[in-house]
Amino acid sequence: MKHGAAAGAQPQRADWTIDQGWANYSAQDHVVWRTLFERQSALLPGRACDAFVDGMRRLPMEATAIPDFRVLNEVLLPRTGWQIVAVPGLLPDEVFFEHLAQRRFPAGQFIRRADQLDYLEEPDVFHDVFGHVPMLMNPVIADFVQAYGVGGLRARQLGVLQHLARVYWYTVEFGLVRQADGLRIYGSGIASSFTESVFALDDASPNRIAFDLERVMRTDYRIDDFQESYFVLDSLDDLLALANIDFAPLYAKVQADAALQPGDVLPTDRVLQRGTGTYHTARSAQACSA
Picture (cartoon, rainbow, N blue to C red):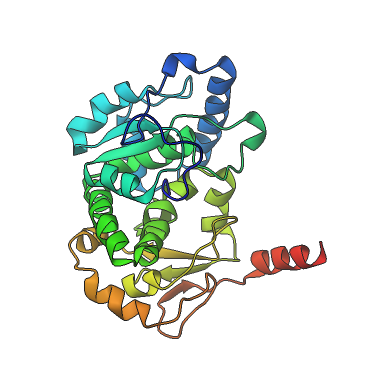
């Protein structure tokens, strides 16, 4: 996600936007983009959902260079009313939600270094543009993310933001969807990650659980490693219902319940694949022995 503790001093603009400065990217920056783009483009066929594939096909996004946001917006804006705006990094919550509520997607302007190909703590232009923008070409996702922005402003005022943030995390960032040809990726955090694109679909370790809104609102997530559980939509159209829900009664209900750990499986869950948990068990053992 693009909100949280913002680094550095507040930019001159109140909305935290900056010029992308496309001409300032170095040759090495474009090489990093090409490396990431080519390996994800080779990996995702048969893994990414149809909506992601269609969005990529329609966008002027290529391996040769980091995309110019102005060029992308010429296609994105008439399609779903969204536009990409450049930002320096993580944004304060209220700024992030206001952008989404106005159908502006804040994208990190910088790109990771060549030695950071597989992991970067702060989302960069590859995560934000390659991972998110193809899905914003889909009308359902476009409406859902705007609704999340509106809901985020309200949740922040109510002091229940953590519950709504979990919904975003387990859908827009790390969501899976069922298609006729099997489980597919639609979450940007997976689609932009070479290693998690494999782990989320192929590894025996994580749980794959049918999406349930209240369940997800109670479930913590991993910000520093692969997810222990992935929540699976039956269809992307299911997000349309979430965009029109009054969350206020749900906030009151889930606040009365204890938070669930990322790897928990409940008797009431519709479990599509029960994970072995071996990956995270091994990681915990390594941490204890270090």
